[in-house]
Image (cartoon, helix red, strand yellow):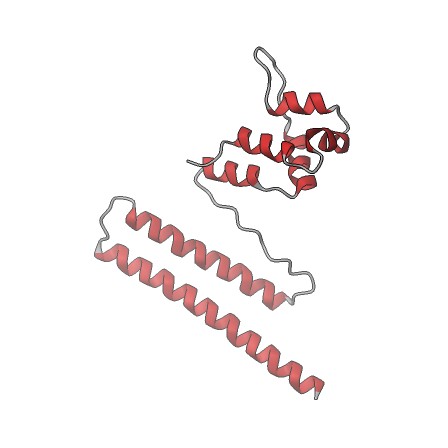
Length: 155
């Protein structure tokens, strides 16, 4: 198993440039307070709050806490591409690809969960992969058309 959530937060705070002292200033608290919140001394009731944890992640640009939370619950975090200025059709393609990929992952995990792949499970997985391939081809076709239109408009 990976790093615990509390260990991830501890390392996020202490690996910040300037350490806990520097990060604490940005949070509006003392360095010793932040240190106690991420690694409480014996018999202490100190604990890191959710908002401060979110700010630590944001200020440090360190996502170990996010990955540790996801791992604890059997999820995975994937950074989304920055799509400012992308067309609505591009956004729709990205959303569809994401959904279809998720369907493939779920079908594969469900099929493999008992160590036996039945005929029906294999057909379901093949169908899901086919839908992912179709969504990928649809996006490529749309992008090819946008590329050709851009060349026509420029020429």
